[in-house]
Image (cartoon, rainbow, N blue to C red; front, side, top):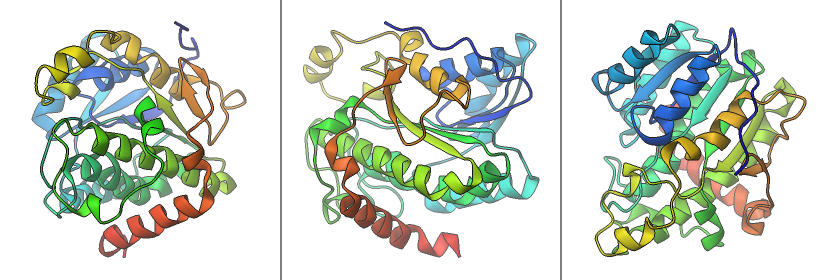
Length: 284
């Protein structure tokens, strides 16, 4: 297993979603160790505070930030507060995710797709001006599961979770993550912004807690630790600009070929058009 770069992030500001637990927490702490000021995002500031306290106890800098990705009203409020404060976003790490849960978001999206893609899409679109001003970087934590599907059913993502394990819906959401990262890399290249997606590997974290047994037990037998799972996220966030390939997909701290479906411009355009339609009222 390859180790991440040792490059530092002194003077940079990084925001990590889902940073109160799992690989998000580990990545946030490591980015702070490397000199970044970290906005620790969780569903509420109270959930983020223990990680902030852990970081400050190390002599590093962090602050809590509330971001409820399952409610687009809350996403818009959080993003607009960040922009209005003028917070620099040198690194935007979109890490938070759900797997194995069933239901709908507040605005009626399949739960996993709504949190993993739609919530992050809206947040990214709204805060991108801050990333552009910094000539910053967006790191999208996707999954190797994105290889499992080759299309997105736009009707299905507006319906309640259909499968027992929710893994198909998870795979669809991760394909959407990879497609969006490629689109953003092209749309914001003019400002010097770099965008990548990555596979952290299968990680023994609480993201899988809602998958019913015996599926969960079988699924977790060959998983990496949370610390190992954060390696590629940290690598992509800290690697020197000249070495990072914008638009690329990373696995085990190196580039890896992406699912060909993500390279299909028509499919990406269809997803972006649909996504802009879903969140359009919040972008006006």
